[in-house]
Image (cartoon, rainbow, N blue to C red; front, side):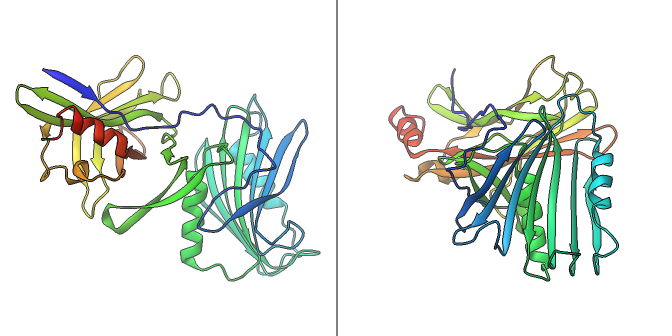
Length: 324
């Protein structure tokens, strides 16, 4: 029996807090450029505007702020409270909503019809604890009202971004099962590893098993805990392919708590055009895996991980006789 593992290509990045002022970024299908970038001993702020707009005159603005607090002296609750108190009684029709909050993350939005010296605007923002301190990604619009579709889109975009994403990263909107979508970051067509509060995806992809004249495929994913106790409350795990209209369960089992990284393995199935038609196409294929970690208490953690099966990989599999 011979096993050939073809892990998904993931770009494992060492995130830093330095952002290039020369590069733009893709948050949606429009070109964004850096309009402002500055840092001191307390924070680093980068503001992105649409091409042909400036930070002085814009309709939409994306801000990334890293508040340096390596000892985490500022709690998430205290920071949210300070942001809320920044809006005075002069802000007309002010609305403030916390969409989600825990010890490490928070998503909130606000809007007003004008404050002293400020025009009407709305903002959606995401706070996350990082090794450096607190990361804040925010989308601000001067065009009101901000409809529900746009609010939902930017909420997903902001919650996708890790503490710091490389300037040359591109965000892609991927359709997944159930008529939903996910937004994930890619660099040069390579997906960035999914990262949650508990775990980070190290690699994931198909393993090809040659057993005599037959070849079978099974999916394997490896997860790294984000802290020594990250997996202590995890009881069950599920791996699914959510690329199609309906989710396909690849593996589901009780979680065996590892000492280091965790391995999830699916059941092997015969490699045929009927089972895996995408393997037999000549073009690169992007599939989407969903990894769910169920805890004994609290909500499950869901990791959405795109996988890239490149055209070159397919040619090599064909040449080696793995595609029958």
